[in-house]
Amino acid sequence: GDSVTQMEGPVTLSEEAFLTINCTYTATGYPSLFWYVQYPGEGLQLLLKATKADDKGSNKGFEATYRKETTSFHLEKGSVQVSDSAVYFCALSDSLYTGTASKLTFGTGTRLQVTL
Amino acid sequence: DVKVTQSSRYLVKRTGEKVFLECVQDMDHENMFWYRQDPGLGLRLIYFSYDVKMKEKGDIPEGYSVSREKKERFSLILESASTNQTSMYLCASSFIRFTGELFFGEGSRLTVL
Image: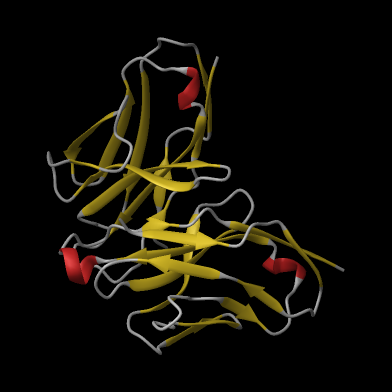
């Protein structure tokens, strides 16, 4: 079945450092890929998405590129801020292939802690 | 502002009790979901619903049931709570035409003693 693998956390960075959170996936067909973020005490919210190979999703200074050849969707940000401290979840939806719209498969989450 | 509201942020129940977790959304979404969030396991889908009175099992439905009598409300029921159901429960909703965006509530942290 479909699965998403994320790098283990927590990731601790100083403010203005470069961030990479690795995400790889296994899926049949042509999945859409997503990054969700969960700030402390809040529910998850969509950060960015990419629906086909070589697409780049971006939002709030974060970027991720859909790499079909390496089955990866790594999250990057050039300069993190303390306010970016949160848990980040990679996810996929194989809805185009299976027809079961809206079902997301999530990774285990990576906690990011940014310090001054 | 769009909103998914979960009735209780924190609950403490005893083994064997019947537990109701309520979720209401004000966005007229057709789809609603219940996920369970555990450290190291991420989010796992318990049940989902595409329409009123309609439900489908997710990946871990055992020990749970759901009810959707109105479009805006989706309830998760633990018929006889057990300690291994201690967890964070997240409700989410989306439009029937899937864009990839689920709208989540803040979560209900359930402790079963």
